[in-house]
Length: 594
Image (cartoon, helix red, strand yellow):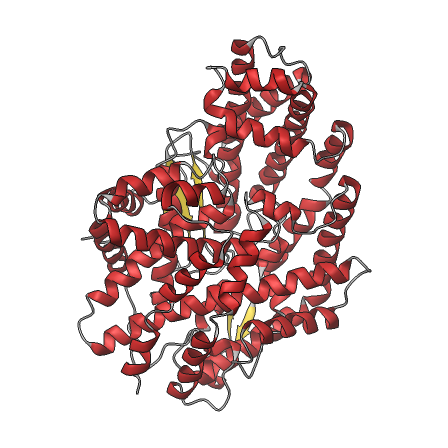
């Protein structure tokens, strides 16, 4: 289907010239001027009776918010593709300053919203001019009532760029500039980036995996003092801010950010904990298949058997599009466009940041996807995952900007759903039992990641914050907390752990989305429910699926599930069925490996 695809993305069609783009500089200048204009008018919005004036004011805010999102997306692409791009860091700092100024504008808006009496407020949001934005305006007003006074919240916004977010930026820079020296088998030394080293962790040779893990752990141990400093300051900032706002629960912000009740989160983890033994049986069998005396952290993603096949980028692209097409022509068309129009940065080279992401340019109706592709099935899954994000954005492009702002928990729904389509279709159409086994094992590895790996991150982070309330947490204690969380989450299924995982996992250092862990598992299991519904309904579910995604920016997750799936997320029943669905291939795996 695809031939000679380029593995580097095209940013020139967005802003030509990279970090030195004159067009982007002019874009930022105009954006800065508009934010200043809005700032001068903050707090002077028209009275509620003037619905048309309110609509005009809200539209100006939406326009700036969308343009700022476009600028942030471009900078994230520049800094990811080349961590040594000093110009990208400079324009990134400029975008951060604009973002802080705009956050203060929104704080001014909040002060206006909270000052409006309830009766007048109901009349305002019920007016035809603003009815389409009622949910997000109601939400904004409710959240504002839990904040400090506008002057202090504005001060927080102004100081956070160089203080709070600065620690995250510094971590990204440090991690991006790291190199790890590998000498597997005593061969020639090779300097690789952390992202490249992570890909080597799935090498079929156990001695290579052990060597990479040893060097990986030592490399992060060398950076541990800095990482601990950054992590402690980030947590200290949050805890102090929460204290001034009168918030006692550290999960209040991430739950509110994800539009989720605590009961929903508790029900999800409860259902997972009750069903971990089958996942542990998979790891026990894998240990036998790999002929290992000890199963280490680095072995969890190791391929089983002797199949060492690698997919070309073109083969991966064709496979994904073919599987998408069996469910949704719209998804297949979007993926085809992404590959053909070079929305994807996939080249395996030094100098790139770790991980993968999808970011959107809503004013152009485009997205950009960042991965490091080396031909593994894991890379294939990552591509499908990020293309799911791009599809999610594509169904929201025609909505008002404020209605496009969905939380991370539901953001992971479309991405994980896309992975399930690809994985299940591949298993069904496997050429033989050997191929079928490899594909089933890949799905079970994904279950380990979502039900155990993410759980250990959640356990670590909640316990770390409890200790951080009492004072700075040392490197040694961070290692203890992390290993303890891993042992509990994995039910002691591993013999060797990764104590410095708290340092190597950049998600702990992301400031704009606190507790960047449980939403992945939520999205994974919620997707399982959506996927089950899709199989039940058949091809016509494509429209229902698009409608569900389009509502993710204007509903809480419990309402989204009730309206579109008819289920109650605060009860463990839904989650239990979802967990059983994602591990349903275990019996087949055990049969094939007898």
